[in-house]
Image 1 (spheres, rainbow, N blue to C red):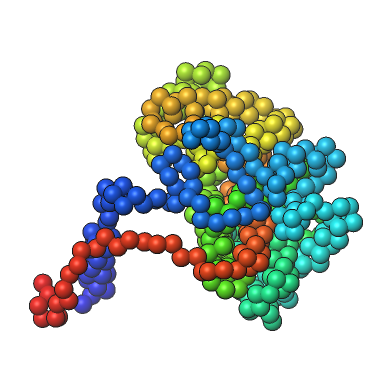
Image 2: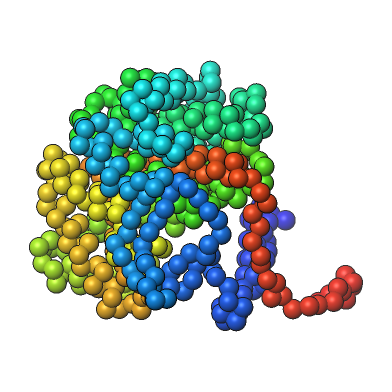
Length: 456
């Protein structure tokens, strides 16, 4: 059979098998109601099904008064401390906050000055990866998706660790600190390899500096001239703090608990969490927000005209604009309804960076969409709780003002969230119990086995 004939035969076979898989995998949506299945482990009103306990992060969005759920402005706590107080603390003292946030999440307390400096030294000493690791693992096998580079690199680091399968608490803390320290390099070097091999651009490999914060090192390693302003570094640091943790129920942190409960190693666990975050329903929304606004700016002539903006948002919901998904990206959240505190914090700080970059008009456009989108959604969609902007709404705008390429948006999320993942892995190890295994009900009809000659 000729080559093209073989290809045609394979394509037809794959098409037939795909349809067979689709047909025999479909489950009637009615059955989910019949058996009261909490799809996505969530109730219809948006509440998550309680599957675990944690002391690390708390997401608060409602109160219950006389058995009635009453939405309230969203609150986010790290180890019981309100995220607003944490942010206000380090911003008012004009210093970086991500390192102390990592310490708080991992060890449960805010560090004093001496503990914080000791912790920074621990991280700085772990920034350097194994000899030739960058060349042999990252540069020789580039990928179009930097999250794949990071996951593959994390798994490769297993082979460089003589105690990789040691799940003792002390060894796990050692491994987590090393991963937190080297995540910025994994992401930035992965991007440098991508732009060189796929876009034929010059590759810049700057070694991280032990005297810089993690946020500063990201900009230092990413930019060809390693230059950045203090405000740029502080805004990136803030974004890292806000993305560092979001309770045990977010998908990637839940994945961390699930894998840790099996007794597997740290590298396999974090690689799985990276795979979860790579999914566009979890970690990629801020890219969509930026792309949506670029489309909005092309189609809305007057950025001050509320009616014109509202008409565009209506087209989004009706699948007549942008990617025709029917979504207004950056608006709505699985838990928050009235407000996402991370979005409010970013909005309040973004104005300074927009002024430095000469983008005040665009910032005001974001504010208009933030105000109008919930109204438009309320007109056309049946919703069980309110909607508001989430952290992705402004974070993509921040990254674009920092000239960070879109390929690094989700990896930046990972650089921040590795702190939360590490804390959740430690928590699961300390409270080791049963393997996490939820129930699934089979709805397949009973059938008899047929001998091969009797099958149609």
